[in-house]
Image 1: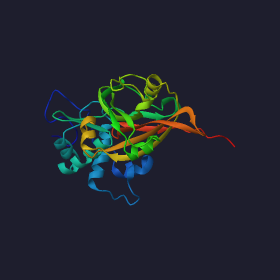
Image 2: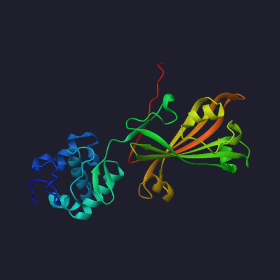
Image 3: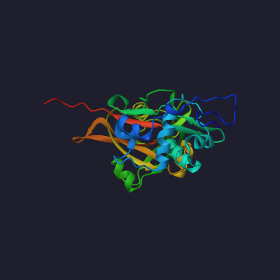
Image 4: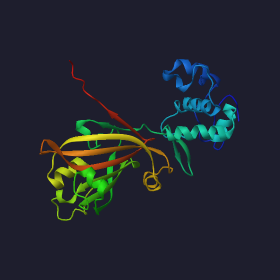
Length: 283
């Protein structure tokens, strides 16, 4: 394989853009000419895998979404690094959502991440940035609330709660797993286990006659469990974003809004960005 250009080693019918020697900036230039210094400290000392990561990221920037990147062997030969170093670099780029691995096919430039904006108008997570968003109903069940869930919902322990689970997808790609908990007593439908896929806000309105007036959000990073990983089609232990929402009705309970539901959404961190906007009152 030529050391001056990158091409596919396996197929002469599929060509990648040609990367000549000066197409990839030297590490020294990358560290000073780009925002945040690319994570490179002032002394310029970085692990070799991170150097490979920066160079591969530069290659990704010249390819289009869905285009396969050169093979591990090709990259190792072009960059003069060990295949294990290239592997470690690409693994990080996959976790960060810049690359997408398709087993049995190869590694491709990933599409832009889904953006879930936390605003009053999109509190139920329906304001995604692009693509064909949808919810797939997985199951619903009546469960007996333990003390923790009862405290979370402000109900008595041993009360019956409806648990609903839905898979969130965009352009047929799983991006989130949503679990919702609503006290059974709030439902007005006869059989609350035969429930169509819909947002939490819409469900409260259409099936409980409740208008949500406030949503409290708590966001943290957690690792996907084996079950969550299987449903989201990611490796077990992949970092995810968990958005825990408390839903309150417009009706007051004493001098406080009434808590009517809890929802927990696990988003793939490699495919999702969560944003928030806050209006600051002028003094």
